[in-house]
Image (cartoon, rainbow, N blue to C red):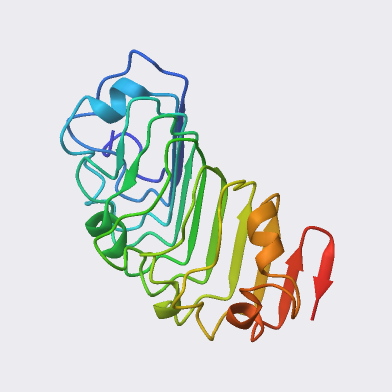
Amino acid sequence: MQDLLPSLRSLKISSCPQLESFPEQGLPSKLVALSVSDCDKLITGRKDWGLQSLCSLKTFVIEQEKNIESFPEIGLLPTSLTSLYIFGFENLTSLNSKGLHSLSSLEKLFIGECPKLHSFSKEGQILPASLTTLLIYDMDLKSLDTLGLHHLTCLKNFHIIDCQNLRSMPAEGLSSSLSDLFIYGCPLLEKRCRRKKGKDWPLVSHIRCVVIEDVLMT
């Protein structure tokens, strides 16, 4: 495929349940954006996704993969990535710290629709320090501890959406660089982050803009 499509920049592979592997010669080397959706056999059928050689890849979207329990559990992703979207993993129970922390150029990370992801890795900081935007939504999270959010010195925007059982902010607090915090559909967390009244208000009071449901606090 590399020889046939040398100028291909964007590729989307969707709803191919019987597709088991990428081409042996690899994907086009100049790919900038890759999206894989509903291709369980493709993702679980080999030990190496073969993406590390894609030095131009900036955006990777992977969604609706029912059989993956740990991400990334197969091989590593290219360090050139700046945006990673992980959606609809029905059986995802953990995030691989080595796989994510090594993405030294990653700026945007969106994780959602993972009903079995109750907590993040306990191995220490799993997110790369380069992150500027983090979105977490529709998960059964109970804690944000072990994410090392206070170490993310580039983080500007943090969105937490529809995490009904999320109980509190991490005890160590959030990064001083954070300028925008959005909390929707997280009743336990919303109560704790209310201005002056919430137990976690001291942990978020330094943030320039805090939006809880439809309440704007600046």
